[in-house]
Image (tube, rainbow, N blue to C red; front, side, top):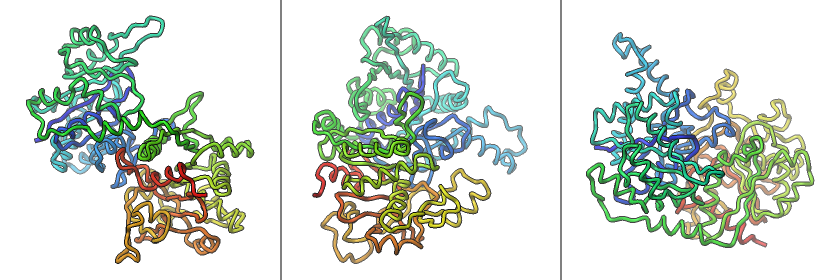
Length: 552
């Protein structure tokens, strides 16, 4: 029988509920338990697929094609597991399901109401994941902030579960304690109000994680304990740190793992530890020699601020690969639109060890990205293209090497004469019907890797048998509508482009690369989704290796 840990947030958004949830899961894993996690998002969208990354952050994609919140990516990275659509709940999904059931007469003529039927649907989804995974612990992160109207029904579901299974449900509040600069003292009052709001929803937190600029001292812990109705040992310090991967180690300083087990009257199954994790954090802190990676994108500018959440999986994948080589990752954000306005500014790319052009939609900044790709190709700068980054590499090569000056994508020019990138036929029907959500090539697809290529070496190493007795495949995640147009494959290959990966089911191009270059590889899929802290993705690993030791 699973135990359920609900994680809610207090005072303000963006305080790290997701990484706190993932860290708790990592700690429980280290004590020998099977752990899974659910993200509950309070928005009415059915999934995250139609949201702008600047507003919402990265849209993460699971193997089964679910477009979800970036916190699911953190769960996968920390727990080193692949999650599914059952690990993701939204208000839209819940209401859609309840309405469909009502239309199908599955409520036997009852009056369907917001309470209890909406919370009951949430509970049924949690129970379904329980049956599917048979996990020892299910962590449920409730999005939003305590006191908001939007997540009240999810808190109600948590309250109802506690009522039915009092010994199997635990509540953790992640709350913010500000330190006003002019006052110079950590304030507990906002957290006290957050706990009161949670109490009004019928929930008393069992543990409070105190997020702040500094570690919580004894007077603050004592004050929270008194006014929030918890013991002092139930108040855990969660100060700002340089790396999210340090969070489980910080929590264990306050004995959080054993505290949770004690509340469930459980003991560790195995005397495991976080040895590999501690080594990873040590490497992240002690690596001194930098590797400078620039990301040429467009989803990180919002007013006067830089929003890095749009590319969170790419950031983490770069870190994983850099730490693998004991290097300090330095990530820079370069605006593609700048290169459209100021062509000569593209020369700044020579200041970096490697360049990434990530995925994206729409034509804003596209010509600037193409200029950056051309500069990398001509000046032998290691280049990794992801999704759109592959499509634009094909367009640049077609224009400037193959002489197809009008080469383009039908995404940017519907009537272009040389569509080297085109939409799949089945997608044209969906777009014509204005069906945009969940209609792309989504989730994991097989990719057959061509022997004697850079990508073959990255995935399988030099020890892979050749000729292979059977084709060697990898499985990677996708999120796109447009593909390399196979009508132009021969023209591209005749001028030196190597097509190193093909989807065997549809014959679609998955990977391209160039010879006589330190590293020029681009994938139609998103390798960043499958990178893990202790197991960097092969393409990111080889890209960073080339950035550190470029082939002359």
